[in-house]
Image (tube, rainbow, N blue to C red; front, top):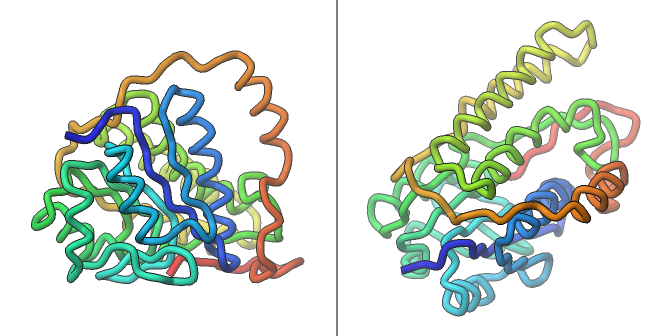
Length: 256
């Protein structure tokens, strides 16, 4: 039986899209740790199948999550190397766990297969190409456009770390999508129609399969020192992300 309050995270960061998404996931890791969760952060070159298997075997994590390029039948790590596939026995390592993948299209076949055939307790992911709009290379949560796309993702992590059920966390995420869709629908920004269209795309592509009442653990109170430190850090860029996000232009990026 997987251990509550333990998490295995994959954060590939080898190109612009994964670097941006990885920097966002670092926020979730910080929050989960502040909430008393033990997190094994497999970042960069450590985002491999071998390391994932070792982490799950040693920690027996209740929660597996990650960012990486994906397709309908595969989730990949660093340098687009496969980690979990519908045709792979490695998927059985996820049995009885909660899984959330910030990865394109994995909600179509892979997520269904994990729950239906591999014993995964619950899967959250995306059946579409997860896409966002960003204006320049910087911390995406400080970007006027990108923030709208990543706050709904973080909301799901935060609510899980707060001890909420997967369904409660999922619905809180949807509420955050709806908040930003409403915000940009009322905006006169010339980019607003593109932002709204893309937000609706991601929201409607977010899926949940399996046991909606699952939880990942019981949180501890957040230390005051964490709030102070995070209040300072949140105003600064997390990483110098890859230059695939074009300077001085509004552009789309996606984890595919």
